[in-house]
Length: 324
Image (tube, rainbow, N blue to C red; front, side):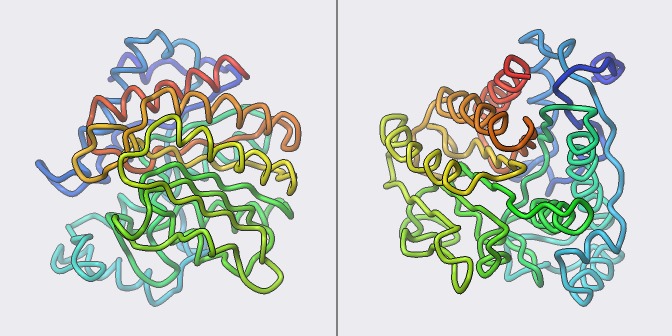
């Protein structure tokens, strides 16, 4: 990986990679292992894309940045259990380990580094493989997700840059519940989520009736797919995502491109191919060009078949590079 990371030449697409985010994992043999990062890095180099991206280094998010989204008491809990490495950060899916606070801060910081590269014009597209931790809520961990980098980025864009419409598109097999409920009443987040029907898969949320509440009603789009759905069903639903985004004209796009929606993932039941991710990324670049000055942040999200995630994320980066 060292030779790959030495490439820092500027192009229209940036990626944030490195050991600091690779260490966000839950041990050997766990679905969310540290080898996920390097599987992506190797595939990107094998496809010859390592020389067509600018490599940025992650950094730690500050406490104040975490608290843009998360409650102070929850941040305290993570810090405390990170010191002992004992217990869980939720009801039993997300174990604590010594140093998990720092590793989770680096994931949030990596997404903020990529966001600032986009907002300052250093990059036109950006991608962070170990990011998109969409289950964490404002007050607790969930589903391997300690801090919700997507939620922090949304709040940062609103407060630091004054954006009024931020698009969040999620094609992970699991519903992005931490993002949805974190902004359920906020019309600034234009939310679109294609996922396996929650009646069959964790976290059990994301029905089509969930469209936001109060002044945010209609700004949220949930599109559950039945177990076994493939590219045909995905593409049929995808047309609604594009229409939703075109109606709301987001000024920045966050693309959570979890690869656990591909056939062969060990813990989900969808049967997409990497072509679905390539199509979504290409079309989102066009929407970003139309409404968001080209700005699109891709985050890896889930994906527990290493070959699948390497191929799907690499296709997303290729689409970013070719459209930059």
